[in-house]
Length: 174
Image (cartoon, rainbow, N blue to C red; front, top):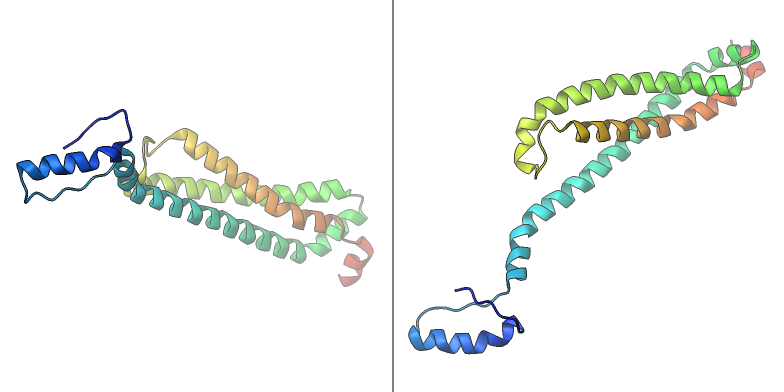
């Protein structure tokens, strides 16, 4: 039974309980508000969404750490080349641009492969999407831009470190 009231909903509970008990004494009665019923119905999807958001944030952090590690390794392996470039006249900005260009090339390849995998996997996740088309181009563009920004931010530290390579020390190691 649903009752609409302009006063406090639970204030009518005792009156309704007596009325129902008078008509049928063996019927169990439970009172709740529409807000509580709605909150109970959306709690599971809300929890799944929160969990998915937390895991997505963790995945972005792991991706950032991975890109940083790979670029730090690449810069350490190419320190002699970077030192030679600087000795021949490359500025610190040129070195930063070189490393960032390399990082963004790798990120673009990874994004292309990831977007292809995401399009293929949307059929599996379509039940979790609410009012979003499985092939929504805006969503893919925002995610690609976010991951590109994360890759750029993660690569900036190793690029700055590469620009501080002393050419004399790098050439001596050669």
